[in-house]
Length: 325
Ligand SMILES: Nc1ncnc2c1ncn2[C@@H]1O[C@H](COP(=O)(O)OP(=O)(O)OP(=O)(O)O)[C@@H](O)[C@H]1O
Image 1 (tube, rainbow, N blue to C red):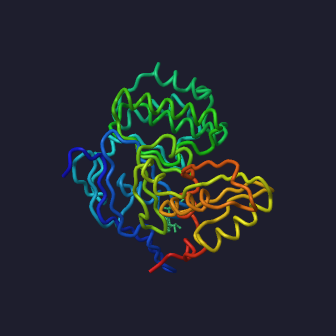
Image 2: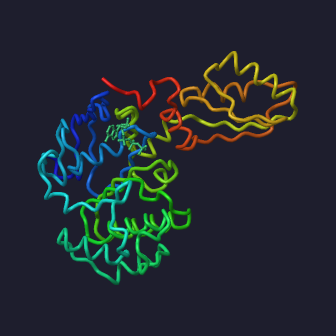
Image 3: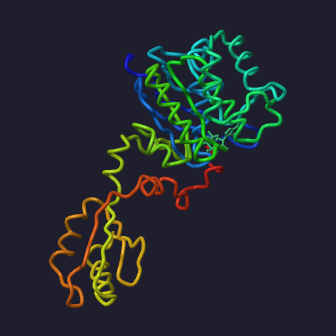
């Protein structure tokens, strides 16, 4: 058992069985999250994210595989006490609709025997622009979500598991939420596991990411490494449209794995695999296009969004909801 790991998942499998069909929601996945990390867990709808989280939290039965939390092996089908060390924002909040945010915090504090600093919670509520005096039932979706966020910030949890924590929040509050989260982590050195659909959110706020698709982990990487593995984007400016057309034809014959992202009269943006970068540089530097050199060019790593899109593309895979055994 590795003491540096906050979460270790080994060969996790979960089937949902009904009379009509059996769905393999999580298919033999393994990963670990180091203590103090902010770890992003990404994947398209129905990929298996919530199932994985619920298995880690011991909220599902019939889970196969091994799970260790904060250095201790747990039986997810039996143990429950370890959950008190985990702050959790569920994807869907099941809170008493007649209580307001502070009443909810007080209730959970008694239920789980966690002490909390009311002043700190009120400060966070103010930063999130949440009116703590209003009962849950009259709150909008985004404001309900803020109540869930408050409950995760109540105790000094060693581990925070956040299932789409910013769902329904406007962009300013999303940014404020991540500021609060990072401040909390600086103070307590907690580990943060964030499940999200928002790629830029993970790109800007996580150290590492796992991508799950069709119940299988298809990528685990440092955010910076993933960017290196991604496509290179070349933006070229030609002196004339003739030059651009001549160049495009030559490119298609010499570098068929290049794809044109956008094109105007004299400008073009091309995406190429990293190992073709030298080839493209040679094409750019050695040739004159319609008698003119290329006027200007820029090379960038493609954004994480472009890298992830290939994992989100489900056209050539079986439909997710039909995944069954
Ligand atoms: N209680 C259940 N009974 C039967 N099938 C289920 C149940 N919960 C989830 N599933 C199925 O398991 C698969 C994984 O679902 P899961 O909710 O884990 O995905 P997700 O990645 O969290 O999706 P989303 O991003 O849409 O929340 C899906 O095919 C889903 O239909």
